[in-house]
Image (cartoon, rainbow, N blue to C red):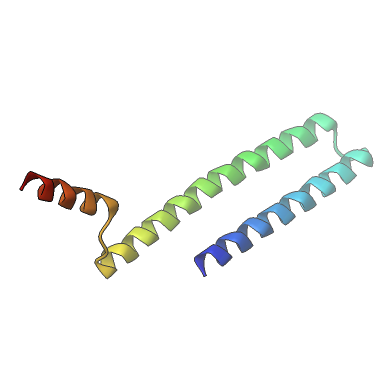
Amino acid sequence: MLKDMLYTGLGMGVILKEKVENEIQKLEDEGKLKKDDATSLLDSLSTKGQDEEKRIKEIFKKSIKEVIDELGLATKEDIANLKDELSKK
């Protein structure tokens, strides 16, 4: 389910990016937007998109950690610590 949500979100992002690029290209072709302005706008949107992606990933990681804690599941670190303790005995 999480994988489906992730893929859906990524797909929507790609579609939106393509539509924005097409609209900017139309404005440029019609002379309503200069090439430098179009490039600057695309760069700005790309930077904002990357920042938002990082923010969403952090929220997602935090949510997953909370679920793991609530379920009481062992983490890789917990297992590694247990292995170390057992090897010392």
